[in-house]
Image (cartoon, rainbow, N blue to C red; front, side):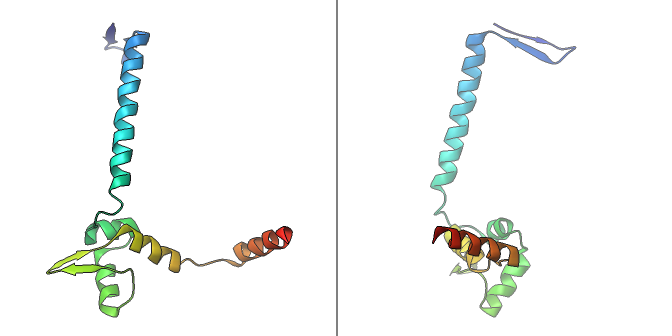
Length: 112
C-alpha cells in the first residue's frame, strides 16, 4: 500500500513495500559498484584521465610532449591511459610536508 500526499510531499508506504524499495535500491547500488570496480582495467580516454587527475587535457598534452607525466598508449590518433598508471604517477609525485615527515619519524621511533 503506497499513497502520496501531494500537499506535503510525503509518501506513505507499508513496511513490506518500504523493504522492497530499499532492497531494490541496495541491489542497484551494489550492481553499479561492482560494475565500476570491474572497469579498473578499462582504458581511459584523455578527457577521462584529465578529469581523474583534475587537470586539463592541455596539461596532459604538454606532459606527453615533454616526456613527463603518466604513462600512456597511442593507437593512431587515440590516446589511452590506465588507471593504475595514473595512480602510480600520483604516488610518485606525492610531496611530504615537514610535519608529515616528523610524524613518520615519531611513529617509527615508537615502534623500535
